[in-house]
Length: 219
Image (tube, rainbow, N blue to C red):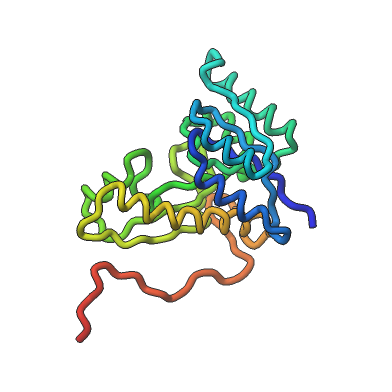
């Protein structure tokens, strides 16, 4: 089986990268991580990847005169490693349209909200302030606009009455670690393909489980 060669871009501790790596460690998983690349000073994510036997590299954006030259270096290193597909996993740099279009339909991201709601930063604080009763996370293909792109998979989490941003973030992170590997599996196996700005699935997906919060009283 030819496995999709994946590069993972991180900036910090790499918890979603670790979830992806553990999934890719299965011999029947249709993708493999060939490089974990970080732009950050936090060594945690690279240390995790090295511990899992994955090639790593640090390319600090501080060493480049502008965003374009930094992204050219990223692409050169990724392509030299044979990367065919990119997973952004806590990569805390805005990417230019040039980079995104070079990797168009070959780069996905995970975001800690139910897109299109709460794009950008501080999602949990904003969700609580807005008073939503359900939040969650989304894996989507990357487009030049922030947190835009075809949605592959989402997971919903009830917002509890005593939630803080940290408690909500912790519960959502558990679901991030579940759905990111599943999104990669769907793409790498050909079970899901991107068609313009929508996803097409080879088989029926979804279920009829209804999530309501708070739970209505029984009649």
